[in-house]
Length: 512
Image (cartoon, rainbow, N blue to C red):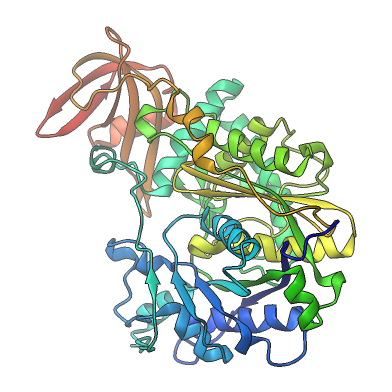
């Protein structure tokens, strides 16, 4: 029997703003509020639902997530983001939360609110996320000054940025910027599959072409252009290399104005509010796990944390991945999808498809909140096929933090509870570290690499290698010389010998 305290998702909403002049466009909290209004309307409850929300969570926006100048606008900010959204929708929640950083955050928050709802600590919750990065970029380019400063009174639980995904040593050598980090994983995958560069470019194109097709049919997509595998695999013109082996159209696109929101409550409260049961979607399984820091991972083409997170969610739901009717994997770069498929035993061309949105390069990558759009896109599909199941995989950092949710309109039986991640995280923590040194020297071999491009061509290279004598891993850069960078691109660099040296805290690798 269905327990009255069972947490359910009762409303979802999305909002995308395109083609609006910066001085008339919405700020991030305005976009989040529009998505929230849509989610509230989606519940089919009687008017006045917003005033009953007791917990409102806003996912941290990108400009508040880092100190990197690239993401700072100078246009001001909402000092109390959840209450800025609440004011716009007519809510005054007792609990206002501003989340930590990470693409895993939306699924993790849904899990948290589910637990608090089941315990009776939350009656009606709304989670929202949004970005207005395209508007900010357009304003800067056009010399327009925007005023996005907002102050709202009331409590705020600001959870801060959270822990770092990378070490200072990694960041000093270029690891920790997504466009420069995921290519390191991809080249290991290419090597494991025995592909030449042209073969792997086409394989990645075949993986992502169906994503672009889904995005082209999604009214909320920001970059809804369908592209062929061959177009995606050709690194020229507008599709120039960003960091080898990824052309531009294989990178997450964060220059978007997109928002999403979900409304959650209990079965008891849904009945009291008159929310029709056909709107209800149940969370049948959840899982979370955290990977080791990049330098210490045994392999770059696998993710034990992803396998554990998904496995725990499926186990809790009493299902297998074969039972899923719909899938959405975090798709910032091809490697994230390839690793997810490999860990779950899926073919890259699984006939169910691997996205419900179109993915971050084509649908758009609204900062930390993409997976909330994935949930918002999943729910209508589940409602349209009663009894079906869907899996959402959320990824934070650099295959660093994983969260998985299993959803269905099929009622969940009994009191909602989950196995705490702390009870199984030890399975990851206890894995042996790869041997690593910050001060390498001597003969070495390339384990993986990437070459980073500017508009004028290749500018720098990042090398992860192994010392020949000890087998210790290290991170280095090559000299930024055109001949060295061209050599890494013109002939296979995986397994290439060379020498590495250490001076003033930085490592330099010179290929043979």
